[in-house]
Image (cartoon, rainbow, N blue to C red; front, side, top):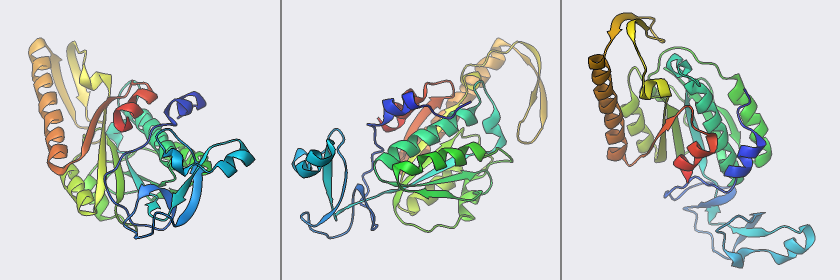
Amino acid sequence: MKIIDNDTLKKIQRLAIKTGLKLEGQAAGNRKSLSKGSSVEFSDFREYSAGDDFRRIDWNAYGRFDKLFVKLFMEEREAPVRIFLDTSLSMNYGEPEKIIAAKRLAAALTYISLNAYDRVYINPWNSRVHGTFGPYSTPSSFVKAVNALETIENRGKSNFSEALAKMEWKTGRGISIVITDGLVEDGLEEGLKYLKYMKQDIYLCHILSPQELEPELDGALELVDIETNDIIEVTASGELLDMYEKSLKRFLNNIKQQCKKFGIRYTLLRSDMALEEMVLKVAG
């Protein structure tokens, strides 16, 4: 299955990931920086997008290229965007599988970040971060990011705080997007706290399958833990489904409360959602 198609890219290209952080850095982009450069100190150009200040349009460039460009100044900087993609075995579950939806969302968020001239890192993780793909820093590098996402495989159990503790952290404040099903063996809350400590503006994209959100079970069943291979034999009944629904509500509420406590943007997503709908919920 193709991760992302051109029609979807056209639908999402005007979106942007919001951040309230003031950023550090040297490369030109579309974010406010801590740098003290004057607003009249010219830095670079980028193509005009909806919402830009008309006073910054360079009409000479328009006359030459028949396209609108806006001037960037030294106080505007790129935002490092780190995408933490859960690649533990539990992400293989569902129809469609959660990992497919997660990779497609990661590709879409990479695309809109690169269009904003942000610098993107993709970090697949389970109980550790398996390398860092990137940085990708120009729209033309999007194909490389997609190719990287297609090579990532799911394996092992998940422990978010343990994964972050083993990760080499090279850059400072920015945006961190965590894409996970939340079925983490340990360390989700501690990992989120660590990202806040690292001065990150955090998005938690919580992906669950339709089968997890609205299970349809009947009769005697053998349930297998996809990460540990532990087996439980149960008989599906109305009472069991009621217990499951209550447990699911507690599970979702717990993660929402963690996010509220740390000022994290939380979005619950279904793996069968249209990609543009997912992106709108996260970044719209």
